Length: 403
View 1 (cartoon, rainbow, N blue to C red):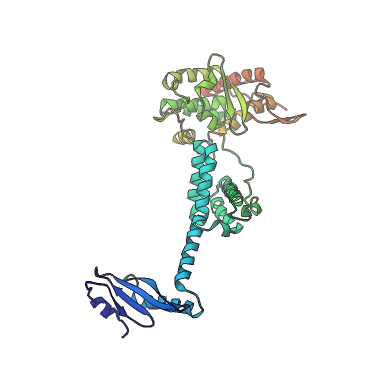
View 2: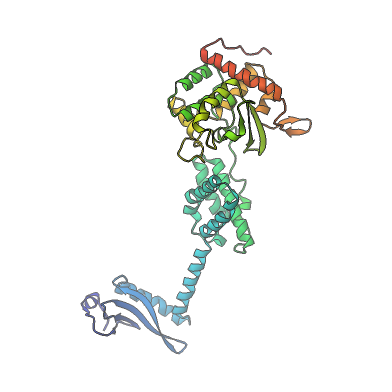
């Protein structure tokens, strides 16, 4: 007789396992512990075999009969359902072992050995936040260019264009390693590398009107925060270096007696020299007793090996009431200096560009020399600091130079 749910629920275990048949080879194996296991008895190539179909009540009677019918269809065409199951399981395991996430994590681990800890962590966050949730479980050999591009488009949609381009670049490096390891035939990102267009006219917010700059300088003087952050925000307009260079400034690179700060520009991998004005030296001398025993000039946490975070300057500007998207950012001090030095103090643009560590075109092409115009730059940096003092004090603003 065919089984029913009512009958199955009333079955009592015995001292030894026993079977209760349903129909067409399906039966229930009742264990002494009370467990009820679905089994299918079948013959293939003249041999009698048994196939496990699950545990009751996790697998209901209807589910067990459906599984039986699928298995019998395989048997009807000469396929052994047990072997089909093994092959399917092996395929799933192979797909999991060769998923994009598994292979990318192996690549990240190997690639990161040559990177700074901060860069390695940044790459890992990009994968975990923006890539793995969408394509991480996909077998790497099955990924199509559109899937990767769609993933990058989601990043682009929130305005992070550079991050979207970086995502495609990193995925491409994963695929290139997979090609070497013979896990894929080619790199699908090669056809989409230019699909994400760079932003046009990327400008950092800045103040270039002397009256606005005067208000900013007075706001900086009135700012209340930790002494380290107060020192950093006071020094920023005087040296107008990139924010990352300011926050990672090291005492070993600064010679207060010579009034020089020498360091390697991370963006261009070139040596740079910043002449320090008297005002800048005073700020650093006052800070030295506090952080001078650490590696970093602007060390604000408990770890002497870590500088202040990359958002500290902008956070301070926001606390002063400034909109860092439309008014001024830490990077905006560079545009402020470039504009006013040329338009108000009549400094030669070539001298300014060298102080900004930009490659300046000459008869040999784009070039940068850390010591070029150094005498003029020393004078310029002191003149700039004195001019900022005059603005802060409310002195008469210099007029635009005449054409």
